[in-house]
Length: 146
Image (cartoon, rainbow, N blue to C red):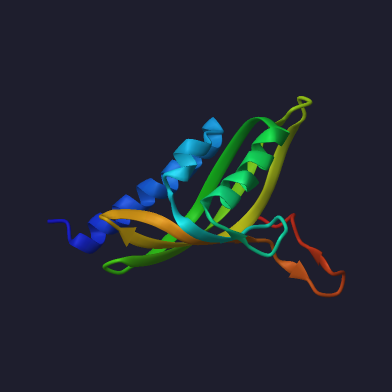
C-alpha cells in the first residue's frame, strides 16, 4: 500500500519531469503551471533573484531564444517530503543545438527545488541553480560532472 508521503513524492517527481518536458518543448505555459505565482528563483543568470512566475518565465524565454533545440537532463534527484512542503536537489544539464546550428553539450549545475502544496497541487515556490565557485580566480567552475 502506498503511503501519502510516497504519493506526494511521486507527484513531485512528476512535476520535475514536467520541467524537463516543458524545457524540451520550449513551452512556457507548461512551465508556468509548475510554479507558484510568487516563486522566488535564484537562477544562474543575473540578477540575484527573480521574483514571480513572470520573471522566472522571462528567464526561460531568454534561454529558449538561444536554442534551436534544447534538452535538459536530471541526475540524482532526491527529495524530503512533508505534508504540505517538500525540498529536493539534483544535478541538471541544459544542452542542445544553438540557433546557428552549433551543438553544445552544456554544463552540469546544482539545482534545489522547494515545493508547497497549494489546493492539492505541488508547486515550486523556490528554486536555486548554481555552479561551484573558484575563490582564487573569482569564476564559476563549469566543467565538473556528477
